[in-house]
Image 1 (cartoon, rainbow, N blue to C red):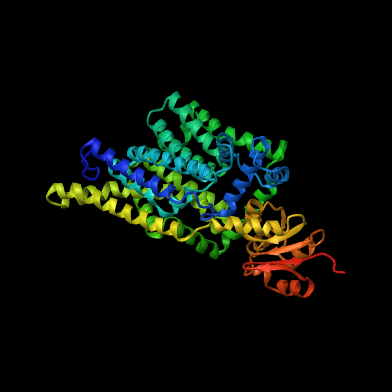
Image 2 (cartoon, rainbow, N blue to C red; image 1 turned 180 degrees about the horizontal axis):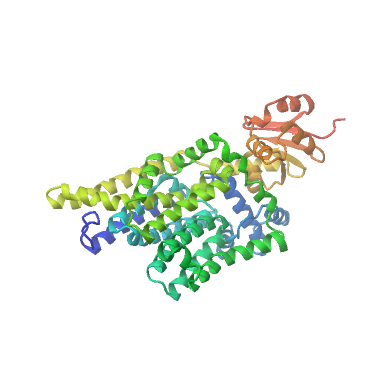
Length: 506
């Protein structure tokens, strides 16, 4: 074991240090995991929750559901948009079948497990890319970035995609160093699985792959390499076939939703980059981001630096194409945690050994830096634990169940949290959704209209009630709330909700 690895000269010491870090990373992630998954982008998680429940109902094993609930679960599942394969949902359904009931703890645990596996892959990747010191620093950042802790508990495909992206980067770098058919097949399969799980990962995989090829063989020679074509085909084929089948054959992928994500007009608006910066700050912090950018340029020239730069190029290309979501959805930046870990690893590999040389006696240096890292880890874990403990979402289930019961046998439209997701899941209620103001703005940018009053009036027909829990949403301003109170009687109201009666009055 290299002495530069934070003074840990023995393999067992470094192994123990990493074991402690991974154990702490697992521990903070499973803390309070039985709470409802509403602490991180609940709308996206509810989409997977509704899909998994419907798929579970379709198996015939959900004997705890009534016939009415099975019908609702199936309808809600089929009403959810599909943009990527339902890998996490299938894992959840398999677990529900094994244990005999729904339990959201398990799909969230799978996400945590994938993230930790990704952390192991990152250590191996950084060990090759930078060295032992950088590998430790980068891995610790990846495991304990506060945003990553929350994101890696989420029932959504992104933690799995990030883990696969890391292992793909590791395999591609190894292949570039020791070209061979075995490494080529492994790199291609891992890359293909990454793109299959989430198509947008193709930006990272393609940029990394081409940068490695150019650095290793040059632009002219790389096209003549058979393994280049093998990896390329394996990387794109699974995702291509899935999306081709879903869009053009079975038509279960909503291409209109995909089109609305691409808004080139936002690229020339300065406000877009202000919001992009805000996303970076929330995910990794601006200091870590800038240090990571600096760290790229101290990584060894050649394939290693090309691999690091390729990941960053993929990040920016992704943002250019999906600029709207990059400025409004911070989880689109989740792979940035990996990129910052790479840059910090490069910087640490250069600076920390020099710092160790300045500290005497040597045993202090060997003990001080690992201790400081563990203290930082402990502080982060405590702060995140406090954040998790501060809010208890469990009462939400009862609130939405009671609200759903109030309008059980009626046709309703609603403006509630998470695109009516909470009402759908815990309230077992299908409701027509009146878009919130941020979605109306998105529709206007995409050229589909964005007038709240006109949208409401177009949706009134055929509905008996209008349920509102987002009482402070800007959608309700501009005269809509006044119109409702002047035109429709209040059927019921309570803490946090109003139900307007839309039925013709006698």
